[in-house]
Length: 137
Image 1 (cartoon, rainbow, N blue to C red):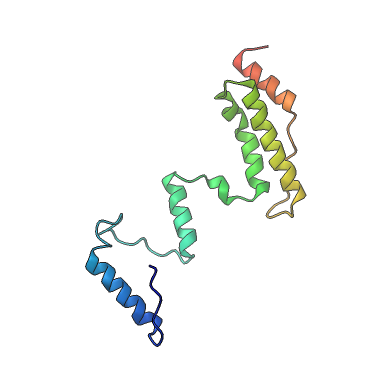
Image 2: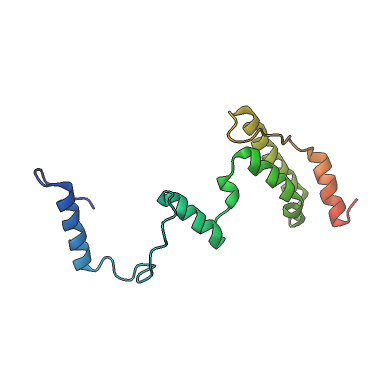
């Protein structure tokens, strides 16, 4: 919408006219969710409801909702499974160094949530464990 509200017209009536014009043009036809009931309100704000719904549908990484003090330990816990899918030692080193950089950054920032107890990983030890998991020496 690029048109400005005319002076002397209330916002409510101006918005109502904009909606009526869009309906007349058919702008609301065939929208996703048309004809489906709205989900019941949960008492939280709409953004929270949206995020929870997306997380339940499985297309949103729930770690994005966690403070670093909870997300980073979980990422460390999931690291062996993630590295098992990697085929290059250079990529393993890159992943571990990126994780270590985020751990260091989180320690340097004010804490949000529980105390961050995760420490940077030993890159060489992690690479050795990755090799051992692949049957390499």
